[in-house]
Length: 468
Image 1 (cartoon, one colour):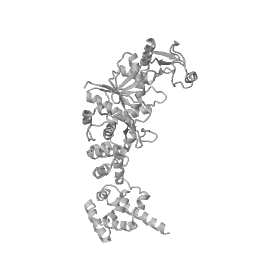
Image 2 (cartoon, one colour):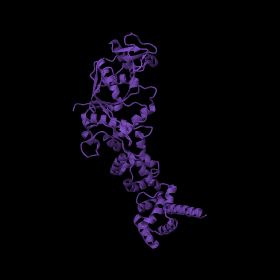
Image 3 (cartoon, one colour):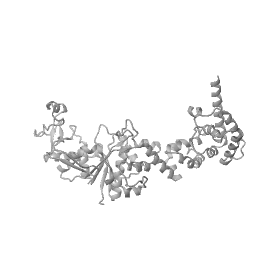
Image 4 (cartoon, helix red, strand yellow):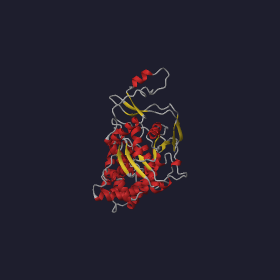
């Protein structure tokens, strides 16, 4: 395989999308597999919508995902002079012309039933640059064929592409011109991007022809869709990489999952290391049909990788999540967390869930009303008996706690499971969580008895209120 020069060229007009993560990954894989070059370029020609905060978000997301780039980040906004020079060349060689038509004037000239779009009115007027004048590319009268590595041959018939604007009347170059100039100057060999760019690709091919530069190969990736098979939208779907980072999704879990959205290794394998994915990825196996972004499947991938993390790496990856619950406030707190995490991780799908399940170690937990309502009527009296029995223990460790509660359950003529329910709610704030006896031992006798007492009072007050 010859070394490829590929680029990932996001526009800083919003949060970094999971679809963009897939596009970046595929380009990165091709560069690494071929021993080529992965270029990060910021396509910031849209002055009205660009924000520096979005540029920062792109860089943070790429670094978090571990998609390192070899050149860049390059900024289109710094290359205006270069685009202007190419535009002047296109004019001097007869490939572009100045136009002063407004949209209203174009529409006013149209006859009923006439095709929409620009009518070429200024093609032969010989206008020069001036206020209110845009620069249009003179589209030749022939079919344009785009050979797409994902979709095959896509033909755009002669006459289907209007003379399109390449420089606005403000002097600002448009996306299609800037992209082509950059791709030529960067010697890009393969343009792999989202399907939404396919309609502009014949324009790019024509510009390459006019500039006597062979076009790169093209590949356009399908849309990602939700469970209703509608294109993912930030207005109704969770699409931002940053949102998944805050949820506690691991970077490689996200990349491994999105790698399989449209690409298949040809086997039932799903989990790949970084090196395995570089070796196995094949653009020929990328499908052109929309791919379903299933958040539940992503969570399953994340759980797989979460459970495989060594403890030190788990603490590093989840630092912000665990810090938010006070796990690093003292050395003792950190030691407690390291003892609890092996019990929590098998039950957690994300780092944020692992942190939430561990929070009871560091503060008395709030108890939601639904947790209290689910408890049996005997829970207050059981908690009193539990507190008395646990208060008698000489050793407050998991085996001693379990033995005491089993004996108490027999004495009360109930099951250990029934005793555990109010005790778990009192100490952890939830009916579900890590193993109870080990959790109590980590919380310690003082905090355990204090929390039992607090819930018992709440239950008794609630019973009296209902009776009254």
